[in-house]
Amino acid sequence: MGGDSCYRAFCQYLVESSFLKGIIYVCHDILLCRHVNNHEITLEGLGWSDFFNNQLEPQDDSSVPVRISKVHRARLVAISPTGSVNPVLYAQANTADFAVGDWVLVDPKNQTLQRLLDRKTVISRPRGGGANQLAAANVDTLFIVTSCNADFNSARLERYLAMANESGINPVIILTKADTAGSARDYEQQTAMLQRELPVVVLDARSPDAVASLAPWCGWGQTVALVGSSGVGKSTLVNALIGVGSSSFQETGEIREHDGKGRHTTTSRSLHAIAGGGWVIDTPGIRTLSVSDVSAGINMLFAEITELAPHCKFRDCTHSHEPGCAVQAAVAAGTLDPERLTRWRKLRTENIGTQPDWVRRDVASRNKATSKSKLLKRADQQPSWLVFR
Ligand SMILES: Nc1nc2c(ncn2[C@@H]2O[C@H](COP(=O)(O)OP(=O)(O)OP(=O)(O)O)[C@@H](O)[C@H]2O)c(=O)[nH]1
Ligand SMILES: [Mg+2]
Ligand SMILES: [Zn+2]
Image 1 (tube, rainbow, N blue to C red):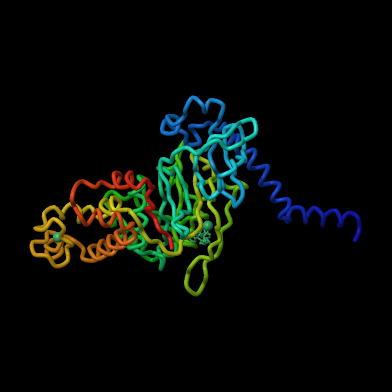
Image 2 (image 1 turned 180 degrees about the horizontal axis):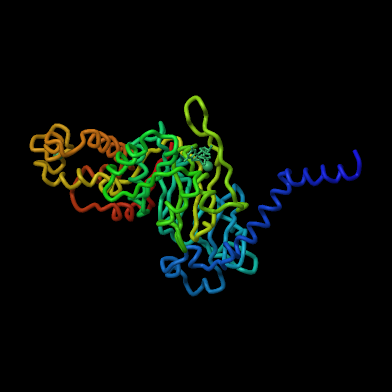
C-alpha cells in the first residue's frame, strides 16, 4: 500500500471510528451549551422560572443553577448558559436521585453540586424495594406516542393519561406511522374519545411536516418529553425536532418484522435542544405500564363517570350492581360506553391495590376529609404515582 492510500485509509478510519465520534460529540456538547442555532442560551430559555427562583435562599448566592441533561451511573451532565457542566456529586449523593430535566445548584468555582431544587413535575418508576427510578422532571408537555398499528391500545393510553393528569403535565397523543395505516382517521377518532379536549396529532414521524405539527407545544423555555412503547418513533421525532445535522442525533432502530415490536434502541434518557426553541427529552421504550396513586388523574380522565357518580343512590357505589346507579343507567341509555366503564373499574382497582395499606385503610374508613395531600403529609412521603413493570 502506497503512502497516499495509507493516508486515505487512516482518514477513513478516523471518520468511521467511534473514538472520533466521541470527540465530535463532546465538542458539540460544549458548543451546544453556549448556543442553540446561534442563539445564546439563557436560564429562562432553558426552562428556568419563578417556580425555581422562589426556592433560592440567601446562602445560595454563590451558586449557579444548571439543568441536568444526562444521568449516567456514576456522573451527571448538565447544561448552563455558560457551557456544559459535569456537576461533582457530594459525598452522600447518588446519581439515581437525579432526573433528566432537574435543576440543581452548583458552585461555579469547582462545579460541586450544592442541592437539588424542587420539581415542578416528575415522571418516576419503582425499581423494587420501594425506591423509584426517575424518568424525567420539570416537563411541561408529555407527548404520549403510539403508532397507527398493533401498538395502539386504548387502555394503555389511558394509563399514560392518568399519569400525566396526576402530575399536572399537559398530555398530547401522537399517532405515528399514519403513512402505513389504511385508516389513520379511525385511530384519531378513537383517541379523541379517551379524554375531554385531548389534543391528538396524526403524522409520519419521518416526514418534514412532523416538526410543524408539534410546534404548538414546543418553543422557548418549554420542555416536552416523549414516552411510549419501543419502536413507535420517539427518537425519530426527537431527531426531527433537533434538526438535521445535529450531532446529538439519537439512534433509531428497525422494528421486528414478525410482531412489529421495537428493539429497545434507546437505553437512557436525555435532554436535547429543539431547533425552533425549547427542549425535548427522549426516553427508552416502556414494556408494560401500571399505575399507582393516580386517583385525581383517573377522575379527570374518566370525567363522564366522575360527574355521574354523585347522582348514584349510594355514596360508595361501585357502578356494578347497585340499584339506583346513575352510571349503569347511562350505559343502559347508550350515553356511556360500557368498555370505558370496564377500563375505569380495572384502572381504579389497580390504583387502589397499589396504594400503601395506610392509605387504603383511610380511604375505607371515611371518617373525615382525608385529602391526598393530608395523607401524604402525615406519612411524610412522596407519591409514587406511576409504576412501570
Ligand atoms: N413508516 C414510518 N416509520 C416510522 C415512523 N416513525 C418511526 N418510524 C420507524 O420506526 C422505527 C423505530 O423508530 P424509533 O424512532 O427508533 O422508535 P423509538 O420509539 O425511539 O424506539 P425505542 O428507542 O426502541 O424505544 C424506525 O425504523 C423508524 O424509521 C413513521 O411515522 N412512519
Ligand atoms: Mg428511541
Ligand atoms: Zn353508581
